[in-house]
Amino acid sequence: MADMVCGNIPDGKSEEEDYFKYRSSSQLTQFFADIETDYRHDGTTRKLWVAETLEKILSEPHSSAFSVPGAFARVVARLMDREDAENEGQERLCALKDLNRALARDGLEAFYADDGQCYLRHVGTNTLLTPSANPHRPLSSAEVERREQLASYLDRASEDELIEEVLLPLFRQLGYHRITAAGHRDKALEYGKDVWMRFTLPTQHVLYFGIQAKKGKLDSSGVSRGSNANVAEIYNQVLMMLGHEIFDPEIGKRVLVDHAFIVAGGTITKAARAWLGNKLDASKRSQILFMDRDDILNLFVVTNLPLPESARPKARGGYPDEPPF
Image (cartoon, rainbow, N blue to C red; front, side, top):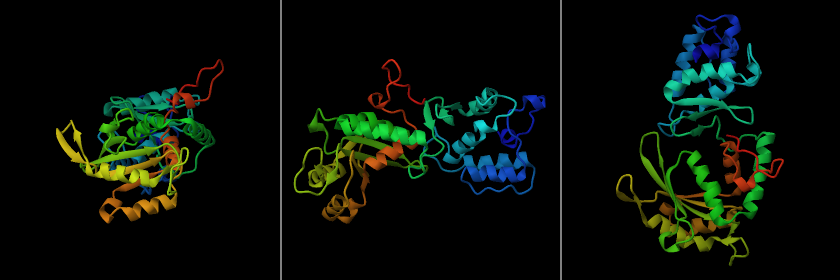
């Protein structure tokens, strides 16, 4: 990969078989600045310096054994920019083939999505490794359109659809695993949580999370109206979630939930957050995490998940468009 980033001509090949743009010392510094890192070429042999830099990037903490640091995913996306095509068309089929030959030994595969960007996935688990999951970055016009389509879907989705079609795929993509949905058919088994899941830290410590999801707006009014939910209604559910043990079959033990997500398909008002914070003691208050509609929409879009089927625009002939991957 160092040769590809530098644009060196591969051994035994002619200039016409070089499919990667040549980069000088200053251009290498700009390349790594483009992927939001501070690495600067120090004047040493370009290939060796790039190889050492890639090793440093790959040694950065990441969520699991089946993922890569975000900076490495950005290296691949920048390297495969279609505007940098050399000796071939913008589809960059030859460059993609060379890159995947290098990635295959680590069980990774690069591919172009419908948005024209190059992404990585882990072949064994088919997990998408996104170059940037920062929900606060500016969105492209295509991402804004997908965000609006998802917002329209949330307006008409039921609570179960919010959980099964949006939240479960989202949290799986964010690196949570062993995600178990209680559903709403058997309230006796729910114990105040709609979903429980776990997250493995880079240190291999495991944290357990519960999710209490509500379809609409969460406010602090005296009673619930329409799709709006009163925060007092979920107060007891949060206490149950934090106080009730769950059984993890992979370790054969019962464990407590470390943190509770309160997720709303609408907004969560400041008054609702403050009311709940005042009702809980300091230890439980620190265990509560909030996610409202904007959080869901932005995270769903920047992780480039396919929209739920009924949220996709209808293609000619009445069939929904294919998901991006």
